[in-house]
Image (tube, rainbow, N blue to C red; front, side):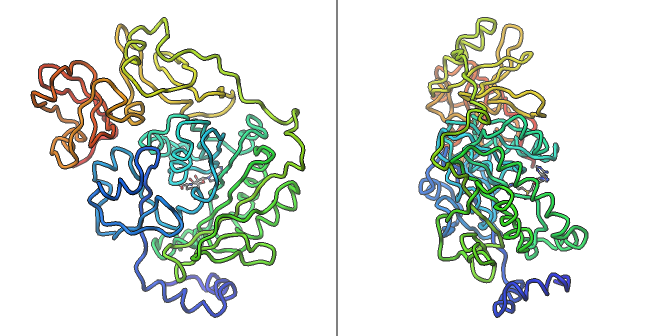
Amino acid sequence: MELPSNYLEEMKELLGDQYEAYLASFEQKTRQGLRVNTAKIAPETFRQKADISLECVPWCENGFAFDEKQTVTKHPYYYAGLYYVQEPSAMIPASHLPVEPGDFVLDLCAAPGGKATELGAKLKGKGMLLANDISNSRAKGLLKNLELFGISNLFVSSEESDKLKKAYPAYFDKILIDAPCSGEGMFRRDKAMVKDWLQKGPDYYVPIQRKLLLDAADMLKKGGMLLYSTCTFSVKENEENIAYLLQERPDMELLMPEWDEYFSHGKKEGFENCIRIFPHLAPGEGHFAALLGKRTDGEEQSEKCLKKPAKSKKTPVSDLKDCPEFAVFMQQITKPLSGKTEVQKERIYLLPEGTKIERGIRYLRTGLYLGDQKKKRFEPSQALAMCLKAEDFKKSVSFKGDDERVIRYLKGETLDLSDTEAENEKGWVLVCVDGYGLGWGKAAGGILKNKYYAGWRMQS
Ligand SMILES: C[S@@+](CC[C@H](N)C(=O)[O-])C[C@H]1O[C@@H](n2cnc3c(N)ncnc32)[C@H](O)[C@@H]1O
C-alpha cells in the first residue's frame, strides 16, 4: 500500500527505531473482534454457547478476537444483541472509562455505537446514557444498535456540542469523546482512509477536536471523568489536544487509566498516562486514549452551574388511565422497569429515572420506546422485546439456537408451534433464542404470527 510521504516522515519521527516494524505490519493480517453485551450474558457463558472460535482480547474482559473468515453477523445471537463486532483496539475507550450503574453518561460522538453500546451495558439499566452524533443518518444507525443491545435508559440526539452544553451544563458523571479524526490507525484495514487523509489530514480535525474537548469539559460534573480517544497516531490530534485542554480548563487533570502490558505510553513528556496502541506492538490496529478528571478541590459542585437531575413524578408503568390495554400488557412483564412514562401522540416511552427532556435539542429518542397505544389495543415495540429475556415476560417461546425456526422468524415468516410450545400461549408472545429476546409474535391455535420489526429482518 502506498502511504503519503509526509505521513511516513511523521511516523518515522514518532516511532524512531520501531518505524521499520510498523511498516512491516502492513504485510500482516488485520484484527477483527467482538465485544460481549454483559448486560445480557456473561462473557464465559457466551463463549460456551456460541459456536464461534474466539481468543481473548488482553485489555478488555468481554472482548474477543476471531478469524475474519467466520461470518458473525448472521448468527442468531447477533440478532439477540449479545455482542457487537468491534476491532480490538477500539474496545479500549469504553472499557477504560470507569462507568458505574447509576451514572449520567454522555457519548458525544457516538455513531454507530461501538462504544455507546458498551457504556450502556455497563450502566445495567441505572442512570442514563445520552448518545449523540452530529450526523443524523449515522445517529439512526446508533439508535438501532443501542436498541438491539437492549439499552433502556437512553437518550439519542443529533446535535452540535455547544447546543448540548447549554442544555446540559456540568450534568454528566462520565463523558466519552471518540473524536472524528484523520484515521491513521485504520490504514492497514481500509485503503479509503488514506485517500481521506490526503483530503482532510490532522490539521483539518484539530479545531473540531478542540471544540469538542472544551464543550465536553463544561458538561462534566466536578469529580467526573472524561475519556478522549481517536483512531489516529498524530501527536497534534492526541497529546497536543490534551495539552490544550489542560491549559484552557485548569480544573481538568490527566489520570492514570488501568494499564495493560500491550499499551505504549503517550509520546510527549508529561503525557505518559495516555494510552497508545500500535499494530506492530499489540494485537490491535491503532488507537489513542487519555483519561481525564475534573478536580473537586474539596468543594461541592457549585449550585449555580449544576443543573440538577429532574425529580420525576413517578407514574407506575402499568397505571396509565388513558391506555388500559397498555396497562394490561405491562402487567405481563415481570422484570422491574423503572422511570416515568411519557405519552407522545400514540407512542409510549419510559424516561430514565431522574431525567427530563431538555427542549431545543434534536432528539431521535427520549427514553425506552415501549410501544403504541392504538384504538383498543397496545402494540409493544421491538426495543422493548430487546430488553427482555424469556423469564421476564409471562408468555414466551424460546427456540434453541440451531432450530431452523429462529432464522425463519428473523426473516419474517409465520411459524408453527409444537403442542407443548402452544400450550397456554395465546396473544402476545416474546420470541427468544436460547432464552434471549428476539422480538414479538402473536400466538393462536398453534400458529405464531410474526411481529418481528420489518426494518430489522434478516436478508437472505
Ligand atoms: C470516530 S467516529 C465515532 C465512532 C463511535 N464512537 C463508535 O465507536 O462507533 C466519530 C463520529 O463523530 C461524529 N462527529 C463529527 N463531528 C462531530 C461533532 N462536531 N459533534 C458530534 N459528533 C461529531 C461523526 O459523525 C462520527 O460518527
